[in-house]
Image (cartoon, rainbow, N blue to C red):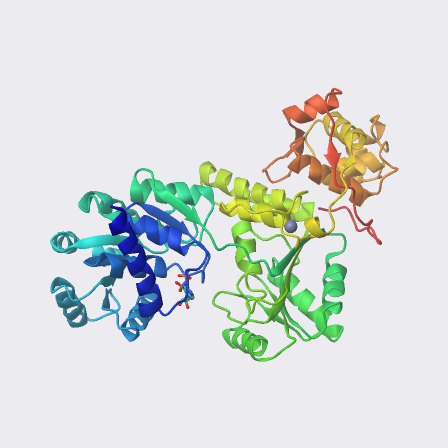
Length: 524
Ligand code: ADP
Ligand code: ZN
């Protein structure tokens, strides 16, 4: 009834203020709590630190009875139980990190109805005896933390999480709340299928980090671009991500040689060296950490002013995680990403050479496409990023596209020329070769294949190579060309590309912003 709803609403706020000591809900929390209190199956997607725990801890108190919390991480369970106990809340944990006697003692309190929240690892929960014992208790809510662990495509798949799909049958009518910070749609579908079996309400919130300015710039000379960026931001703490150990070392050395306090960090270094560099970064101001993705997990430094990606991250999720290390103090910070077609091909090759099935490769290829769509965005980048996570947002005013909107130009004519070059070379070559043909380079490959006799040979000489590379890249993201996922990264024409080549339609593109000062070799 309305009266009951009003009473439950008041109770909710009382608990929030008095028990948890918070003035108000954070963005997204109240909607999730309401859905859970209404007994609905709910999927809550929020980034780390946004306040997921409250979404089951508060309902656990309002609902009374017993709330089961499934968590894969023993340390995390113990932290939460300790924090809840300090706040005067009856909570306990049962897992393999404890002695049998300790677990039995906790279980007695559960069975006696003294505990509101019981944390359990999936393998403890899923034994027949445990399920049967819990079925006799007044279970009101089941919360599954780190729910993405059910995803077989994900990086943190845990086979014991798959067993959780029996919960909805063993506890019919009891609401299940799944929580995760991973938001790609494939994972979301898997969580829905495995944990709920049917529809669930999905809430996505808290992903926006408005103080981080987002910028994506095309690569022309990566080292120089990195050096210039850091030069212009002296004396502040920052992180530079590079793809390989070798690049990490080279970049750190070059920066150090220019007087920057730059330290390397990658998994190939000794434990001590890594720990020392990390310590220095955390303790001192103005240190630039040049690192592979090995760096960052659990790093809590609030005044990192920028995260610079010298190479393409592995996915939009990874990008989001990595840039999230900037500006934790809420002050202005920057995320600066350099990208080039070579990176894209390298990524495609990584995906292709994985020893895994085609379905998984296709998922990864889609993730990469989402990332490229972000890089080539001609609308607000933050909107593109948040939409990927399922959050809608107006243009942000704090990304390069909002601040300096790209003027799209008519690229139909160069696109047709590029399509002709792709077609005349038989749709069997990579973008680098196509560019060489267009600008009329003399390479061995061109001579061997006789490509210097084609009508398109040199037909694009009026534009520099980097401009052609950008045009080809935009044609790929624009759907005119298909970049083959195979090892050679050959470009082929899509249906739309063929139509354009035949004289139908037009192609708008971003103009190439700055020509390379010093063109590099063409080897991709
Ligand atoms: P997550 O599980 O999403 O990583 P946590 O649940 O650990 O995040 O919450 C992160 C921090 O935010 C905790 O310190 C928690 O106390 C705090 N917090 C959660 N909800 C609120 C709120 N409504 N108001 C203020 N602080 C909150
Ligand atoms: Zn924007």
